[in-house]
Length: 270
Image (cartoon, rainbow, N blue to C red; front, side):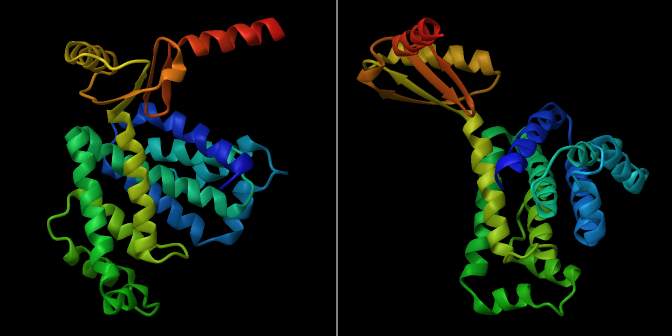
């Protein structure tokens, strides 16, 4: 996904983030069901991505189709996607799949924090390892004549101790791989887990080594600022000249002198 589609997905992910605080797996299930509706109807996909049609009209079309069948939150997410611009009809489905999986990942995070994310990653990875080690399993999960329920039942038997979020994502991957091998789609879900885990890691760059007391105070300050217990990785970068740089997920806090000098240069040049 690139260009305008990538921008639309990023905007949708930003709008979804506040929803995740109270979301449960039913929202992910609803979004996956809307994805199934889009994937089953090429005409509908073209209609909801047609640039000649007004964005509000595209959103209204989706709302009419799913109202009463899914939650109001899921309806709103899908309608927002329809109102956005997409480079291809395929891209809106990819975005919906990403958002649905993100909800499942966030639910695992809310219930277990960093440990919940690690457990989800391990469960998904275990599935890919088992499938990857058996050609018979790969053929069974790829068999076009086999029903999706049968494939899902087989897949879930491979990871009997998996949590609900992992089971949902695995079931989706084998039931609707959307042109991929099921294990390939699960690997994409693992990438979403890894990206989410970065929210629990603070990458700190400093000009010189910190004392144990300084690291402890930094740890306490970051934990307080972000409202969760972060893993702090400290590295020394003499090129910073002075100050400190902290990156947590996509957020960067830069108090280095280099940053200040660059800002000054931009102001002088502007």
